[in-house]
Image (cartoon, rainbow, N blue to C red):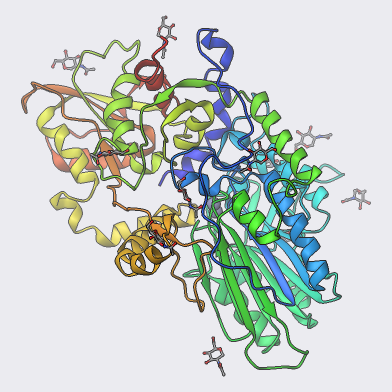
Length: 623
Ligand SMILES: *[C@@H]1O[C@H](CO)[C@@H](O)[C@H](O)[C@H]1NC(C)=O
Ligand SMILES: *[C@@H]1O[C@H](CO)[C@@H](O)[C@H](O)[C@H]1NC(C)=O
Ligand SMILES: *[C@@H]1O[C@H](CO)[C@@H](O)[C@H](O)[C@H]1NC(C)=O
Ligand SMILES: *[C@@H]1O[C@H](CO)[C@@H](O)[C@H](O)[C@H]1NC(C)=O
Ligand SMILES: *[C@@H]1O[C@H](CO)[C@@H](O)[C@H](O)[C@H]1NC(C)=O
Ligand SMILES: *[C@@H]1O[C@H](CO)[C@@H](O)[C@H](O)[C@H]1NC(C)=O
Ligand SMILES: *[C@@H]1O[C@H](CO)[C@@H](O)[C@H](O)[C@H]1NC(C)=O
Ligand SMILES: *[C@@H]1O[C@H](CO)[C@@H](O)[C@H](O)[C@H]1NC(C)=O
Ligand SMILES: *[C@@H]1O[C@H](CO)[C@@H](O)[C@H](O)[C@H]1NC(C)=O
Ligand SMILES: *[C@@H]1O[C@H](CO)[C@@H](O)[C@H](O)[C@H]1NC(C)=O
Ligand SMILES: *[C@@H]1O[C@H](CO)[C@@H](O)[C@H](O)[C@H]1NC(C)=O
Ligand SMILES: CC(=O)N[C@H]1CO[C@H](CO)[C@@H](O)[C@@H]1O
Ligand SMILES: [Zn+2]
Ligand SMILES: [Zn+2]
């Protein structure tokens, strides 16, 4: 929900929160160790990959998860491969492609920023993902597209433009995204962040025309420009770029393969080339998805957070052919078992020296950022959508019912005044798993730097109606379905993908019963169970779907004890929702017209410090 707005505050994180030094020495620094080898028994993939003449390995929305998923609670170990492991995998796959005498390309669809300590834990004066992107640049990507998370903060875009793009040497694509910079004469000019397109030949001599398209994103920072997709395809350069017929078009982009504007780009190409093979590699909604726009094309989207590595293969035919092509696609769980299985390597032969160097470099970066600094030890797993809200295993309950009431009242003169605390559920970004709760965990679970505000002297009878009304359960809100719809559209434009991602999880859960029978036969374990519009089964390893519980948009603390409807209390809320909350407060009562003049700062503690402060108090047996 708050992704778009709140992220603009992310840059301030390190400056505003405490560095390690202020904690003193009484806390342990968890020992850094390479979790190189899975600690749990991982299931092997079901079947070898089907290679074609042309093969593609696809990553998207990696969001800084370059050290892989390091927790031992399932399904995390299934995604435990780190970027060094991935680099070794790519090297072996390239060798296999040479032996098979076929092409293998490596493609990424964007969102390298925002998500873990490796990207967001930079010290004061640093730039998000500047250091972590150096590891990505070491891989032999053939095409990369810009994502919306490269555009929330100008400094990040500028860092891509000045440091990352030159290393990619024409392979970083931003067909419809510009940055405004000063030219040599110190005048302001708008220029593409990367290249608008790339024409190249594969090792096997196939001619490729590649684009890098961003969906109609509206939350970008000043001095960055996102051109609407339908306007891009009307550009002269676009017409010229697609005019000559390549052996295939490689349409890379940070745009979901379903329910967005790929058809606009696809149709523009098809209008000129009715039969040229078209491969679309999308991203952004964080799901596994695939469809075939026609018999000579396929569109693949490969998940998020290095929980999925996508595979696409096709047997190309002679130029001038018009029949259907045979495509395959597969969603791989990134872990060493998967990688070794598909490269016929063993624990002893898998690692390349480059892979090992990347892993070590990432570990060094984690140490430099002090990411394993430990606030406390989480007693069990808390998840965003695998436990009902409210409940003891819900991370939303943990945040608003347990952690916020403790953390926000530390050193607070209003601590003894009863209160109701409210935030939006989109404020929490990732699950919390049992075991050490570190700086890295805080940055992944609750990264947003929002402040908390309050309105004093609201009677409990009024305050208690605010949360249900915010969630559309009040009479006033029920008429507002269209408004809600518009709000969702607007949130999508600004980059919020939670709705789509959760809908996907919910659908998987609904299909569970039917899928279960098939999966149980192969003793599937917990994970993604993809149902897409492409032929055959897409998942490389069979899983049982994760349980899914829907959650309200807004969440609140427990009712204070021993108050009656007429008692005054503090109505505490996160600044992100201020205008919505004032609007609601003025509909549930009409005695007073509440305005921003009635709103005060509740505490200097920001949202991204709440879990850490709570962990220090409640989960820290040593203090
Ligand atoms: C960015 O925009 C501001 C005003 O919006 C302008 O003053 C500034 O010169 C711009 N920066 C560049 C690099 O053009
Ligand atoms: C800079 O200014 C000079 C003199 O006006 C002009 O000849 C040149 O083309 C300008 N360069 C750029 C990059 O605009
Ligand atoms: C370039 O222009 C900006 C304002 O547009 C000004 O602040 C800056 O000092 C100029 N730099 C140089 C080197 O002239
Ligand atoms: C992007 O930059 C190019 C090159 O400077 C310019 O011609 C084009 O108008 C810009 N596009 C947008 C949408 O700003
Ligand atoms: C070719 O593929 C299209 C789209 O997937 C499908 O509708 C059509 O039936 C296929 N034709 C043949 C002859 O298989
Ligand atoms: C893989 O090799 C490493 C290093 O030799 C060893 O520590 C680890 O136990 C091995 N893992 C497995 C699953 O054999
Ligand atoms: C919370 O999860 C634990 C397993 O981690 C389970 O034993 C317990 O029953 C769950 N609690 C609820 C209320 O579902
Ligand atoms: C609360 O006050 C104590 C004593 O001044 C101080 O050490 C501590 O850092 C403060 N905590 C917070 C969260 O402000
Ligand atoms: C709250 O109300 C009390 C009495 O009704 C009043 O004394 C106090 O100033 C009010 N506080 C604020 C912050 O408005
Ligand atoms: C699944 O597990 C059951 C019980 O352990 C076992 O009997 C069965 O053979 C397994 N099925 C497969 C396909 O491995
Ligand atoms: C409430 O206050 C706001 C801000 O002063 C004002 O714009 C609005 O018209 C007021 N509404 C009512 C019903 O008085
Ligand atoms: C397919 C796969 O690797 N599944 C693993 C997921 O994680 C659980 C718990 O660690 C393992 O038991 C599964 O083997
Ligand atoms: Zn993303
Ligand atoms: Zn995105």
